[in-house]
Length: 583
Image (spheres, one colour):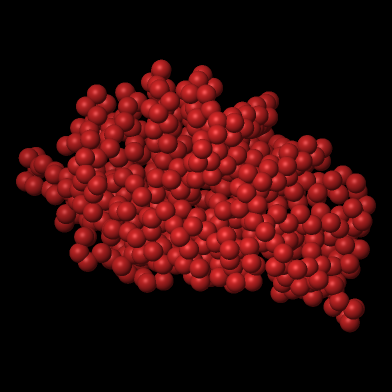
């Protein structure tokens, strides 16, 4: 399918993104859509084309940024050094109706807003034309239909997470269509539309539950439809789109995630990968009996940030940049391994410099990196950690004057800005480039377990269903079960914390704090920790000094939802009249 796609895209790329369809023309040697669907191979290529609008994620934001650097998870090393970086522009509040720092086109990035609409259009073309297309095998026709519906659901979900409800377009539009007639539905209506597409994809008898043939890697499955349905219903129930806290919406989200887990785990089709760290620096094996049964959909997309991050760890001069450094806020979220309790429960001041220490947890502020959640060590390189092959096996020296020291002034690309380095996605045994080692896991099973735990608690309190879902995820990480008999609000706090650490750097935190409407609590600033080493061996002491790394400007309520781009808002009256709040 991929080889066919390359040939056809050369012909079709420029034309199919247009609102008026220049392919439906009087034949003059150019191919038309009618010609495409008269040909079996070109029809198959058009199915492949519908996948081509899935954007890059991972380190594929402007200047090889992670989205984490636009949240409280990380401080990007390009902030203060490279003016065009996505994180630097985002955190200064550069988003507006004419400019979106996450939409800039560079280093292989795509303009997501237009890409999502192009994907919706191609899915609609397929669904309109497949009934009469040249597809000799009826099983293939059915499968293409299921894929098109799942793709349309995917593109709409990604679109509405950013921009709120968008017009429902469920068919191919001809050149005479009046785009000014489009209107915005409610978030519930667009959610219902996405859920309907997912349900029909799940019911499709020819859409497989999982891919078992390497040649079909990257195609959508029933499992993808389950994941999309679980996520969109969770978003629909969240405070941003459910201000009245309608419990029925939470129950719908809980039920969908329960059904997803039941269907996916039946017969061990899907299950959590046994090792959290190894899972995130590998890519899935697509076979009938895979080692990785957790991944639902994976994108082959690594980038230079992986190479530079791992090289910068050596502390040698001349390396390009360190990438995204985990923040102290993320580090504080990791609980204690033995007690299973939060080490830090909050802060006494708005600048996060005075942590509230949970004395019952076993946390020692003078030895803060001992005894933490194993996911901490799988995600963060900290002072004193040992990386094979670096410094001849000596501990990493992030203290002042050390080989990998933090440099507060002036910040540069090579040194950490926070006192930490990113370890997640990087195989510690492999030095140098790791592009081939890691692929972006867009959907995987642990997210659905956490969706279920959150939704069930909001719908019915901390029931056995909610506890079982979150404890499955904690057990895989080597963490004890959550404390029993938590109240609903306490469980809510713990499940939000669980999402923060389990899904760190996976592009969930950026959206979670928005749907929870806590952006003003999380995104005003981020902090780091400067370590000062005093004395000589064997009488050495370390002091830990928290400091504000960055003050940010993208935390007001208007940043909860992106503004509709001016080009569309000026053309479509309903967009202009119902522009998103604050824009």
